[in-house]
Length: 130
Image (cartoon, rainbow, N blue to C red; front, side, top):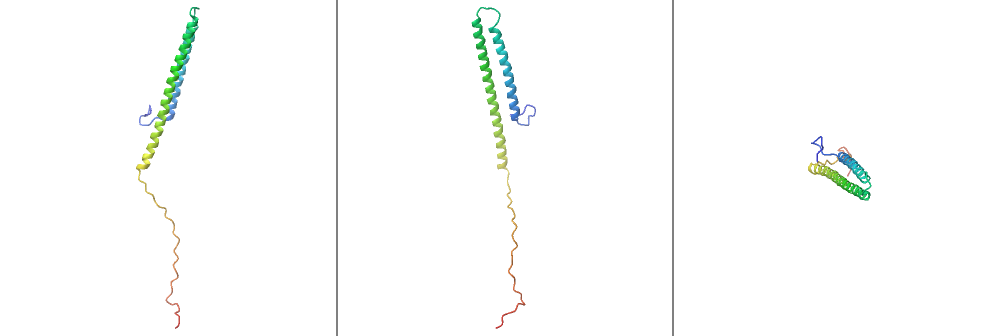
């Protein structure tokens, strides 16, 4: 998946977290409105059907909260999956670069100790007398 503003760049995990947080905040605001609407409907004007209104309001709260929580969990799991996929792509790119590049391994040149030559016999050395 590509970044929203820079299409040549992959989306970053922080962008996914920010989007998930933003959607969670919007879902929380929607849940607040659902609860407010259900409470106003349950305790509205008029004494007829008060229990019925209360049960309807509680059902609206339960269904609204359940639906929004399910949507939030789905978005969160999709975001986590997207971040895991991006990490995997990054690792595979690094691995393919490592395997695709030709490595030239240079052997370190160890300094050889100076070879000591045996002392050459000089021509003027005295010969044994016979």
